[in-house]
Image (cartoon, rainbow, N blue to C red; front, side):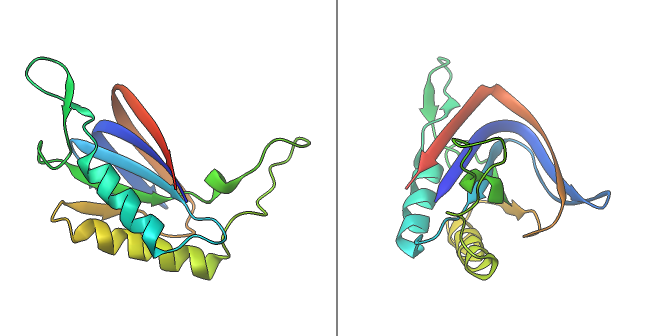
Length: 145
C-alpha cells in the first residue's frame, strides 16, 4: 500500500465538473492499493498520517500533527501509484489490487480515518477525477507499508 500525502491549505476533487470532496487546511492523501495489502497496513497508515508532525508550530518547526491543528483529510484513490515504470514506456499495473479488493481497502481506509474524529472527505473510487490543491510549503511525503 502506498500513500502520497501533501500538506495543503486547501484541496478539492471534482467529478464531471462537480466538487465531490473538499477540505481547507489539512492533508490530501493519494492512496494506492496493491495485491496482498491488508487491513493492518491501513491501520498503520491512518495512525501514521494522523500523528505525523508535518505542520509548523509557532517557531516554524514541523512539530504539530493534523489532529493538533484541527485539519481535515481528503482521501483519493490513486490506482497509478501501483504503476511500475522500470521497463519500456508504458507503466505496468501488475501489482495493483483488483478493483473489488482495492475498493474494499479504500473504503476501510476512509472508515478508519473517520474513526479518528477528523473531518474526512473523499473522491469517488474508479471515477475520472480532477484534483486541485494548494500544497503548503510545499510539503509532500511518500509512505509505503
